[in-house]
Image 1 (spheres, one colour):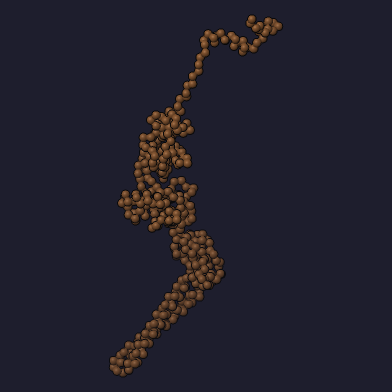
Image 2 (image 1 turned 90 degrees about the vertical axis):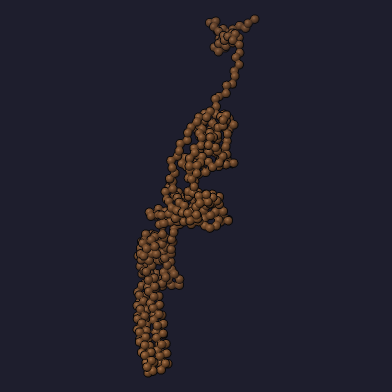
Length: 393
């Protein structure tokens, strides 16, 4: 017997609506039968790919270094005396020959006058001895005096000439010491704060340092180049037939930490003749004009030295990944399958990175959608074209 349906007081079916619909639909299911669901895989994800950009790239040696003054001299008191005046403002720029300090010049002026007077007396003595020698020579010829008298006159003349030379040397020493009473700038530069005060006794036991003068134009930049880069540059120099002097004239470009690009230009000035065996680096120095004195000695700077220009392959720097094995890019092969390719990277050119090895010109590099590109899986590559970056400044 079929179970009786529960009815309410009015004779209506009290079962839930869903139960009644299920019972009503069951005959239709029996008629149509059961349909089996099949899995349809999603389409491969779309990624943007591009072939590496091919263009000539100027290669640089990149390093960090520090600026240094071309000339840095301590100003000292070379004579003893009381400091009479300080003739400059601390930290000011002065021209060569400017008097900076004055050290009690009166005493040394009197010594110079004394030496000049002694020199004048010695000159008079020489003139008298010379006249007496001529007179005695004539008398000896007439046999009016003995030869001994002439010998005495000759000796007197020689002693007078020696005394004159001594007096002239004393005068010169007095002139030099008198000149030391004025301490002047040996070259154009910035003078530091004075280290002594007016009225202080200086130069007593040893030369007393008064201040320091620093030349800022031009300015040096010192840095080190590793041995591998040295070998690369030497190989390029041999290929181009460059001499050692030409190699030392390579341009050098530097920038401060807060500057964009490399706005300061100069030339190499010195290359050490040997590599430091403890660090494996070669000491190099450049010299740059610094008319506005923007660069100060001791500043930390970024440096690059262009040494050759060759065709290269470039990819967006954002397309590069890295792991414990190094840098890599993702490429899409002929079957649209993603592969991980290890590469050796070079310098940055705008937003593109130079690829030294590991990549071919016809490779399709994933440049966008990197998170959807999984090595070993298929993708739907959308071919793009890389644009040439603006020239580096």
